[in-house]
Image (cartoon, rainbow, N blue to C red; front, side, top):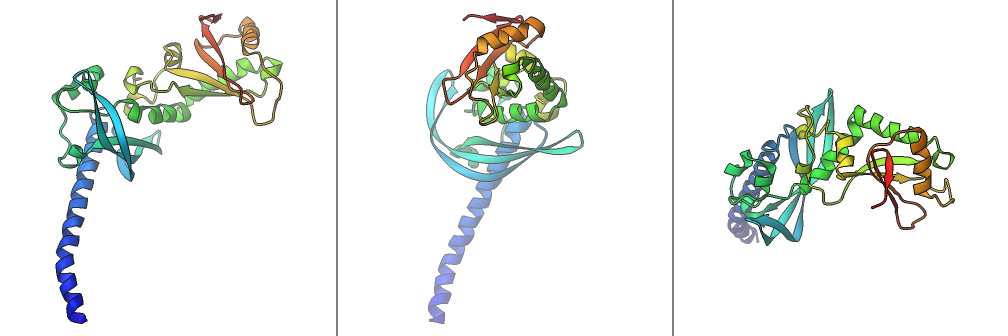
Length: 263
């Protein structure tokens, strides 16, 4: 019995060691690819893999042609110290199997514009939205200037009786790619820590999402007329204001140059 166990171990141990080495090899290359991906885009923080998932099919552009391939989705904890406080961004990044075979090598076009990076003939690069929204949301949350911007909108809206308990949130427009946002002067979060909320709202990359605390009001709000009243006495940033109420279809109002526009 002992002999048989010894033989079994003798056969399986090399296989276990080989699989362990392959796993370490793939993990190291994945980590290096992820680090390189963020570093070439100005993100100077640390990245740590926290999990792995599978995407059946993801379409990316290569030489202006759509190509569907299978990808692994790496869940990432991005860490960066901003204003003496360690901030975490939980995000994800898809990597193709070829990225696990080699350490990260930046393609020549990665020193060019973001647009060229998107259409690189050297390497299929994940779409910028794969890592964009999470960083934009973090900037909105932790930048005091952004919070003041949101508070100013809340104050202006709360001058109307029916909007007193309104909750204001700034949200990225779905599928808006990160490279369309204009970087600020700070290098934090890849330069997006101090991007302009005002400009992004005007350019329809962000929206002002409005809601009420649960069960705080059952009254149907006419967003158009309410914002008209607000604009008589206050200024509101240009952009789309979207009210979600009572599980109905969202009400949308577009403000441009402190006036409501009919689109």
